[in-house]
Image 1: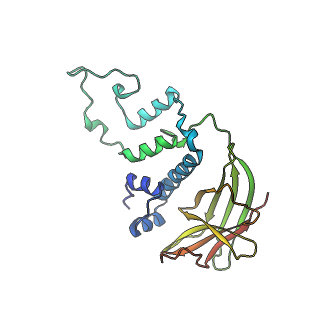
Image 2: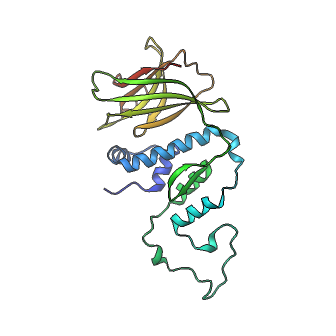
Image 3: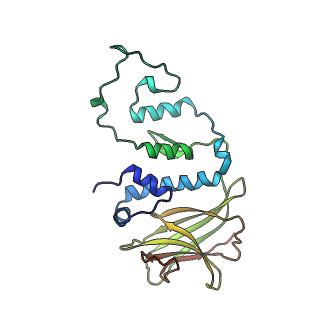
Length: 245
């Protein structure tokens, strides 16, 4: 199965809508879904970081070494390296030597760099020595509703050092053939609800508004939604649980 182009995955992570073919591929391809999930999480966290993200810190030399090794970069393109002179001594290595390397999309690298990702031989991860780990303030086990036996999930509310909050959810055992999954917060009487957005894959991170009172909307609900243009809840809930401190 051919994978989605890295540029398309980067655009989807940044909030661009997916067409029917892309949605169908993400439902069937764990690798692309995982890549989209990882980059979407990065984008959400980067946007939540706000202006502080502009205060970039130069990474250790080992970080660049890992990137250069993964991309098989010649020495003259590394930071601080002198520009090679024209001639036999400064000739670049033949492109055939690098033919087996996976192509890395410039758009993906740009999004990753803006969001503070480190890319290297060990994969993708956060590099930020200044930010303490978020604190878990509420959580819930998400239980399957009768029409979705075997489904399960978790919901965790995390508070960052700057006071911002995020809802981190997981969903297991609930595939979809023709729709998508959406995450909601609902009041205890199931009469008012707030959509937090689409869940890509089985894991998602959703920023919470500062003025949102979770005591008024303690129920976390993940639903199956059709592509019908209706922004309301379909009534087809997959899992549901109540947040508790």
